[in-house]
Image (tube, rainbow, N blue to C red; front, side):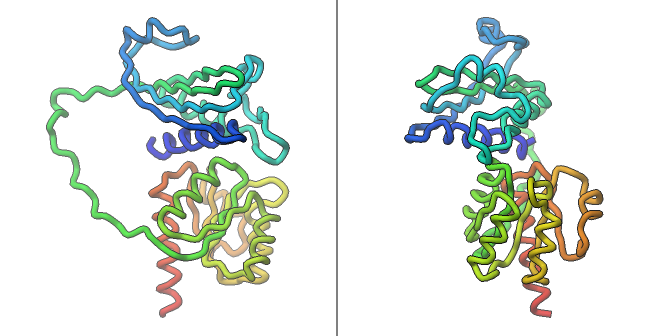
Length: 272
C-alpha cells in the first residue's frame, strides 16, 4: 500500500508542477475527518465515515468544468503531444478506489487546484494500543555513486524514480524512451554502470532497446521494470540471464534496494 500511496502523491505533485509554468506553490496537508463532517460535504458518491484526508494543492492555472469531468479518463490529457500519456490521473483514481477511498478535484480557473483524497481511517483497537510492534529492521546502506540511465516514458514514474536514486547519491541520466536513451549513451561514451528501463514504451520497447545497447555494452547490468509478471516479460528477452526485474508499482525503498543489490552483485562478479 505504501508504494501505491507514494505513486499517488508523486503523480499529483507532477501534475501540480506542470500546472504552474510561471512558478507557484504546492501544499500537501493531512487531517482526520469524522463521519459527521463528511455528511456536510457535497461530494457525489461519498459514503459518510471516518477518513484520513490528504490534500494536494497548487496555485496554478486551474481547470474548467469540462476538463474536470474528464481528468480521470484513461488517455485524457491536456498536455502537449509527447509530454504525457494521460494515464497518471486514471492510475491515481484506480489506486484510491482500490482502497475503498474517494478522490475529488476542486479547481478554479486562474486560481489553482486542490485534489482531496479520502482514505478509510483505521482506529487502533484497545488491544493494539501500547502493544509492541515487530523489531525494527537494521538500517541498510542504500547509498551509491554509480552512473545510472533511467528509461521511462511515464513522466511521473520517471520523476519519482530519479528522485529516489539521486537522493541516495547516484548520478542519474533520464530518457523518456529508447531513442533518447541511445542518444544519451552516445553522448556519455557508453560510460554508465546500470540501465533501469521500462518494458512497454512507445516507438521502442525495453527488449528492443536492450538489443541496441548490447552491441556496445555486452556486459551492462540491466533492470527491467514492468507491471506484468516477470515470466511473461522474460519471454521477450534474448539474454535474460543478465537482466534483473522490478515489479511496478514500487516504493522508494524497493527501487533503491534493487539497484544496490544489482550493483553489489556486479562488483562481486568483477572481483572473482
